[in-house]
Length: 156
Image (cartoon, rainbow, N blue to C red; front, side):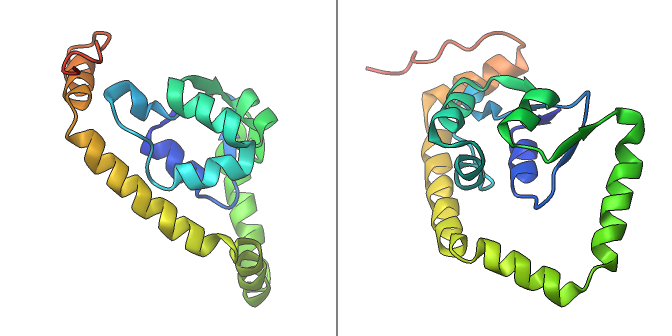
């Protein structure tokens, strides 16, 4: 499973290949946090605001086939084929003209660089605020105790 920050790292990748047994979840909300690692920047560009909000606000887990349908991964292969597929893709990219790849990447992400920096700053501020909340303490406590959290206990 790619959960929390692990899923954020997936979203930050240029090419995403998943096994047919993979699952994905932006589970931060389950412990009273907001997503970080750039996921609030990358996911809306892949699936739009509404689906991003749904996945982030619910912490729902999705299977590899749904991630492919949504455009969160480029392709899904059997677990037995995963390593070979990744190796083949990496070899193909390594054999490509690197200046061309660098320019392609720069051109595709040019408009996003400043937006990404702003998104990362906003996520850091949001995480700091969430860390100070009673809901975060309850979320982590519930997670460690393997029970459902009871958010809102410390609210007025």
